[in-house]
Image 1: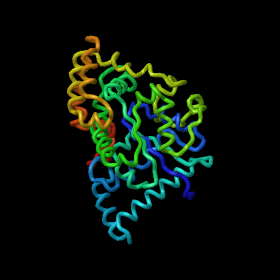
Image 2 (image 1 turned 90 degrees about the horizontal axis):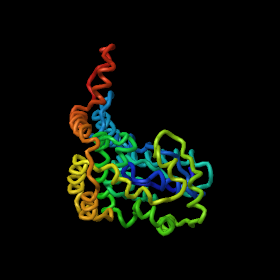
Image 3 (image 1 turned 30 degrees about the vertical axis):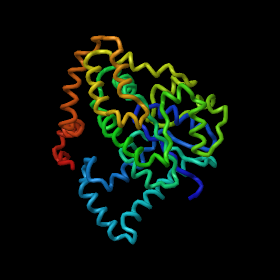
Image 4 (image 1 turned 120 degrees about the vertical axis):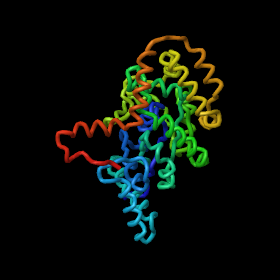
Length: 326
């Protein structure tokens, strides 16, 4: 395995512009990448008791691996070192040129940020922030056809945000932070700072060449890849077309207050300014009825774990396959 390939990570919530940033970075000859690897999540979770339900009994697996680690000369550190080596080998296998970095952009890595930073001390880490109201609206528009669907993404907009801010506060001296809005408004300035952090030259062609970057895979931004042939700030206020009815406005106000000024300061946003902007959005009754129904459905969906229940119902013809998941 080459010792020269450095891992590079983008940490962000979904719909934060990470695919755009990934394509821009991938247009540099020293940065290799693929769509969204996700590979670190299951391996890091082998040491976590919470967060996974499985047929094999995840809790039993964690206990067994803990016992196994106790027999290793270096204990759990040996186990983590093998995860690190395994991951770097896979990164190298998909790096076809002599790139300096392999860029792993997986939004759900917000669940394991600290573990990743500790696994790869030589790595580079980019924290990408976006206006929370833009994220909420984009989730609805991209994956819900403009309808309420936030209950599918609670782990991102709540746990993800908490984890990102906490990790940034802890490791801010060794990471780089960038805001989506700043990237769109002043791309050359923002990218110069980022490439200085990566110790790479910023070629003027990058802002033109990224349009030709195609990321193979089923994950990533399904809309932005087609929309962004050049960098434009037209999408910055697009959220105002979506968060118009009183249900959405009330929910977003409560969400912003939950996020709080302290977290928003770490993200470089102002609570009062966001609340004022939200108040200024034109009033509409569109989707009020469906939003209320979907909010009720969402509470049931998250409480009962309807995905697991649906799987069990589908297996009813073969009763032997219906068993306890833990």
